[in-house]
Amino acid sequence: MPKSLPLVLCLFCQLFIHAQSGKDTLVVAYTPAAPFIIENGNQLEGLNIWLWDKVATELNLTYTLRSMPFGDMLDSLRTGYVDVGINPLSITSMRSTDMEFTHSYFASNATIAVAEVSSFDRFVGFVKGFFNLNFLRGLLVLLLIILCFGFLGWYFERKRNPTVFRSGTKGIWDGFWWSAVTLTTVGYGDKAPVSRAGKITALLLMFGGLLFISGLTASIASSLTVNQLARNPEGFYAFKDRKVGTIRQSSTEAFLQEHFFKEIKTYPNVSAGLTAVNKGNIEAFLYDEPILNYKIKKDSTFRELTVLPIQFDVQFYAFALPKTHTLLEQRISQKILEIKETKEWEVVLNEYGLAEL
Image (cartoon, rainbow, N blue to C red; front, side, top):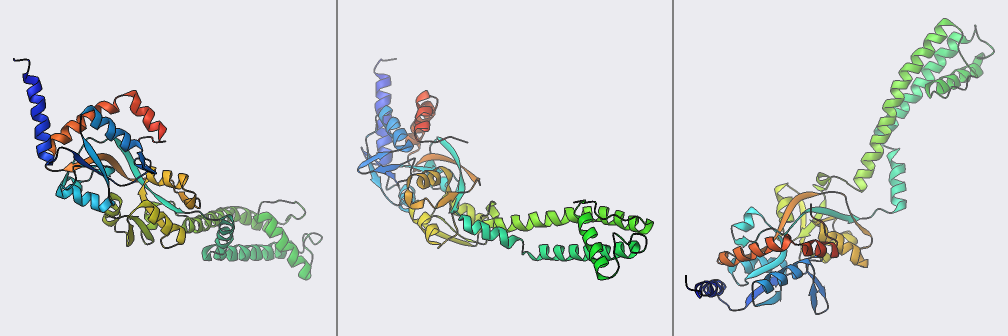
């Protein structure tokens, strides 16, 4: 084989790639999405900037960066107006019909950002939990049990035990006191039945009351939990009928539509969505977890917001290219795999506070 053949093949590949893109210099589109793409004045940094620069350097690719809105970037990739999109794009079946994806370089999930509930609001919610209708019904039944068994206890003991269960209205009060102390298992011991009927009444009160108190305790816990969830939901589907927001044309928007969320407002970027939560225009903003965490942590404007411990819609990030750039996509994918196997990749992930699933 002539020694010049490998060189000729290499040059042919480069020419073929440029022919695919239609340009000698690749147009690389991006939308700020910290910590993957961070705009720091006139400088760009972040995991994806580092990764793309590493790939382009090792593949000898000449490129120019072009900032554009997220939706416009996707449209430009579909039409071939740009050559590469280096945002953390989730690989989806719908997108794959319109564009090529490189090998995934990062796995994450979506989550939910909401406004923090103040200590006063938590206290008010706690108090309101005690006025739940089911709780009030249980409390009424509890009082009836105390009254009924208190009267029976006094009735059976008033003659055999007159010093403890006095006659008249004072004796009835003695019965109520004994019934309440027995039912709540406090057991002061100041009053106790001595007649057979009185002891049977006490046994029924103790065992029946034990079961009822257990049910009432569960009802209180349930009402408080429901009230707390209503203010600070911890389940993905708790937001199904609420006003929520996400990024326009994102995979999260498609995911919410597939799960029949009723009121979805879309925003051009994360800052706009989180601002809407701050102002109360929406109740929650749903998007990629690492991006939300980074934004809320770094931007003091959103210090009143918090990310809930909810994970859904697992996503695999990749670079995207037009359908005509298959050979370029293969070369970039191979280089991404090689970079991910190095120790340097782990260092860069730690530098931006990222950890894969």
